[in-house]
Image (cartoon, helix red, strand yellow):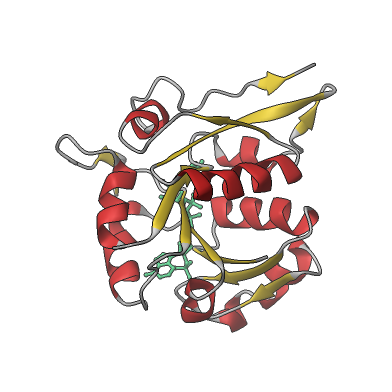
Length: 198
Ligand SMILES: NC(=O)c1ccc[n+]([C@@H]2O[C@H](COP(=O)([O-])OP(=O)(O)OC[C@H]3O[C@@H](n4cnc5c(N)ncnc54)[C@H](OP(=O)(O)O)[C@@H]3O)[C@@H](O)[C@H]2O)c1
């Protein structure tokens, strides 16, 4: 499966590295264009390629890891994600580390509204960048990753990606329920670094 990544900072690169190691083809994009990412992509794995935003957005599955303040403008400029899986790793933090006001919605419900018909799965947002980047096999166990979403089949796909990358995935339910548990800041599971051992 080919995975497109929109946002190639700390989270996008950590995710790219794990997915490349798990054997997926990865297209990495940012706001400055592929030429700014060529050497970064090379370092992350042989199956990671620098790409345009449009190429990353048209992959079989797309991962979003841009700052919250950019989410709407980035997604509005891209072709439809209808029927495709989008992993949302963003957190609703505004410049100055202020929490965005989402009313009663979770951040991924807001993202899902921007992507009509897409199958949005919230994942990879609760661990700090350094922790997500580290080897998920720790002390003989597997680092825990939480995920949630409204589409059961999409969650199966994402759960398998998480497993193949060496993490232990825990499905928290739909975007309203799981998204709240996963939300950063304030959600009870955010920043929690757990390792599942046998
Ligand atoms: N840092 C953490 O520990 C952490 C943990 C979990 C979740 N998160 C969430 O994950 C998301 C990414 O965080 P990060 O720490 O990886 O951020 P980051 O290091 O600042 O990277 C942001 C990336 O987004 C790209 N970007 C910004 N505006 C864009 C646009 N208009 N179009 C395309 N790409 C654009 C940037 O590309 P350019 O440099 O080319 O502009 C950059 O590659 C945020 O929502 C954050 O809240 C962060």
